[in-house]
Length: 374
View (cartoon, rainbow, N blue to C red):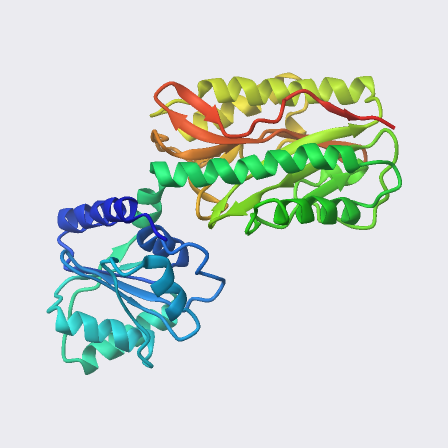
């Protein structure tokens, strides 16, 4: 059942934006935005099958027979949303609602596809109305940056399952297993211990494969002395966890320990910088400086981190292009890495919330290099 208080607050934030901009209504189709506004957990999938119209006084949601009963169950009898499953195209439905509500300014989030936009224009004309159609340029994404208490609770639970899976997999790994076998065990553990799904395709990258930041697990057979980069997360009630730990099968070499120490230092110094109002790029730039000063700058090319929530990659960011302040209440990753082609890779990632006191990780697993006994 959706949290009516939390969802009412989210709708109120959207309506405040509408009032500031002079919008009579907003039409939305992005599943993540709709999940956030409605609170309908474990209802949305990969299909763009739903359309919402929000006005200062009303909330309408159009879906189809595949989802209608689930929406009714998830939202409950007291929901303020008017849910229907009329057999009508999404654009025609939105145009009819706009006509009934006498909408003159109809804002559209720029995540809608061009075909829907074109059809909406046609249907508005058929309905004999001609509202202006200003664009929302990621405004819902900006609103979703600041997590409420319900969201933080779901994110923490997702991470708890993810941390528990790390402890389990460290007891499972041994020489002779393939990356795919390790992946299967890790994902099965999460799915059988509370996860509703996976945050993304699990990365298990052993030995030289670890030098590819987004390596796909394959038939590589783990050997003693290999580092294994494991980047994965549990999905819980539509909220994502994201964590990376690098373990060593047997005792690491001096070089492996040296590089791990550099990555750890970059991670912990950057995490200590995080506070409300910090510019994301500044934190990323510091991670580059730490790694470059140690002589490995050519082997670290990705951004330091990203927002996490209903989507695995959200705003704000800790990357070279994020020149905006990071707000309190946002949930972000910190994940520097060093990747040496033909040798190994190392990444260390936590996910946590930005508070007035600084960065508070949800991730509980130690930053120490975990050695798998052989």
